[in-house]
Length: 376
Image (cartoon, rainbow, N blue to C red; front, side, top):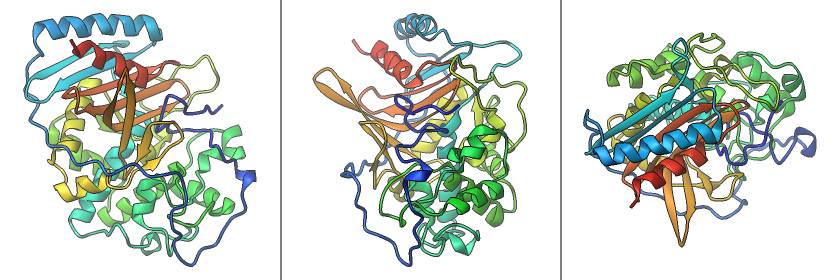
């Protein structure tokens, strides 16, 4: 069973507003001008101080501990891991998991890791954001005009194969080539650039491109380029199709769940929240990408399915109502039946919040509660 992504912007598995039967495939000889809802203004790349290896002040730790206790009651989550990191100040981390399954799956938050690897290859002049994907992968509908930028931004028009009725009726791991073939049978939903529509298969294709350029699969590339340099012990990128026994499994009262190993390049990362916070700081602060490429990630921001959420290149911007003001978060959310996760930086609060849980709760709502605990 798939569920709508309301409250879980950036979900790995979504029920689209447009089902496969509602469109006729299009063939395109050129890109189309954007005709969707108004874009969000560009958001500048952030500059962050390092996160020191120490706890936050005692009073702040106590407030966050109280908030974490509330979250456990609020979500009834079988597994919950949360961290708050304040650059230049310190870090708080708590979790409630089974000892033998101490890490969580971050679903579509992992798209930011795939995107970072792709942008590193652009930085190294091994890829071009505006080159057609047909240079590397055959069989992408309109692949002669769809670009890497389109795949990263979900503006390719590529059908997301997880929405295919046979796939939904018979869930299980299918390799990227199979998912692309399924998407190809459906055909393109629109010409590239014309609209925004979430496509996990687009990230499958990005994983295929990385493997052809790097000579190693996307999980190995993420490990070598991001996880290993940071020395993160709990974090790893799952090999597509491999079951991970030490990961807290998704758990839902609303239907069938998804094995994290099925996600591939669309959601490959598992971790505790502490390591995710440290990794998120590194993705944002320039350790992996020069400023111009980090700027590209939030330069063109497309309205998503939830009000106040916008998508760039593997990065989201959230506009969050808070009384008389609106707060801005920079990050990525993800979810699937029985799992929810979010990793964000709030410039207004000077804090990174990372939170993953299993069950039917909302990581986005939980992150907001933790940020409120930081404020006077």
